[in-house]
Structure formats: structure tokens, C-alpha cells
Length: 111
Image 1 (cartoon, rainbow, N blue to C red):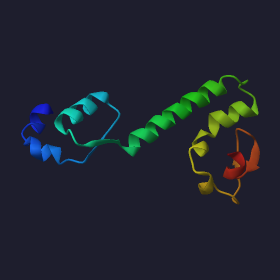
Image 2 (cartoon, one colour):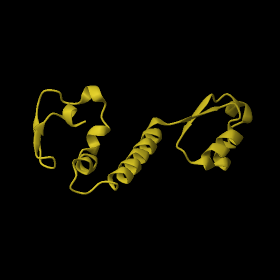
Image 3 (tube, one colour):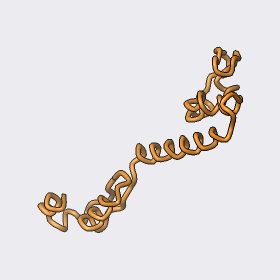
Image 4 (cartoon, rainbow, N blue to C red):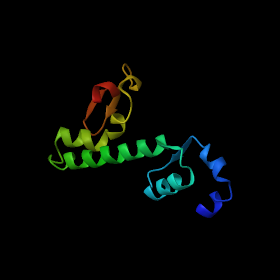
């Protein structure tokens, strides 16, 4: 990568204002070296992916504290996708039967 970017004159590289990356620290060092005036921005996809992984790790750790037949365990085990949705996007009026909880309810009631 360094060889590739060195093909561009340093004055051109100094005009670069932002560089978007994932969370790999190796790239960060290259950007600082090749584009000394650029601000590094982490792309949204990797931030969301990191937050989702952290959420799921915490959810599973918490889930393991409960008996597998408890409502708390079942809510954490089977309804996790709803916890990733924005509250305003949850279904408010249409009910569905949740076979894990054995109840008729809305997404918002489950959340």
C-alpha cells in the first residue's frame, strides 16, 4: 500500500482531508504516514458491527445466569433481534404469537 500511495506526490497527499477506515490499527499507521493532514474517520458499518458484537456477548453472559426455562432466559435467547431495533420501529398494534413465551403480544410489548 505504501508503494502505491508513494506514486502520488506528497503535496497531493497533504491535500487529503479525511480517510475512512475500518478498525484495523495497521491502516491507521499507513494513513498517518501517507496523508499527514488527513483526519481518520471510522466507518459506520464497523462501529455498528462492534456494538452488535458487544451487545450479543453481554446478552449471552446475562442469559447464562438464568434457568433455561425462565422467562428472562427466553426473552434474551429468542427476542434479541427486537432489541437491536429502534423502539419507534417496533410494531405497536399487530400482535403475534410468541411460541417461546406462549403468549400473544406485540413487538413493543416484548421489547
